[in-house]
Image 1 (spheres, rainbow, N blue to C red):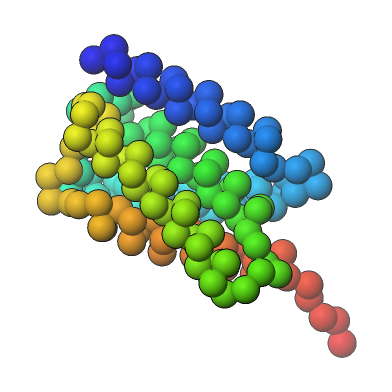
Image 2 (tube, one colour):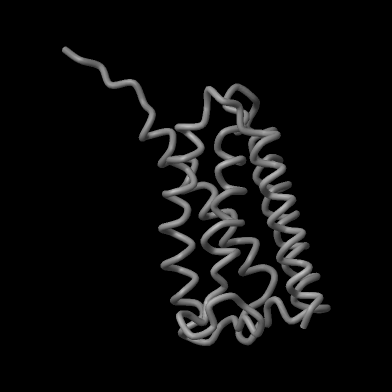
Length: 157
């Protein structure tokens, strides 16, 4: 059980480092909006997935408050999404943009699959890696589009 808490600590430290490293000061507002929007998506969807028995989190913070994983859905995943949105390659080709999505989704999915197989951080019940990857892709896409819409320039007559 101690290994899971070490994993949580290392993931938290890594994400905090990545936030400081990859979010420039001039884009902090954009990162906040992306973080908060992603938080709404992950928290609500994560609760549904856990309550319907698709995924189980055996070791978690606040076990009496929620069966979902507070750390991942409230901090880690939204923070990674903020980094994703702030550094999105707007001026690159469609292939480069697709690669950007692919790298983020694949990296997160690989980490989750490793955690599922070798630790008690997460347990798939009626879930698989493909659903994880697809959900990452969809939520990153929606978050990016929302941030783009939120910060659009409004033309006044």
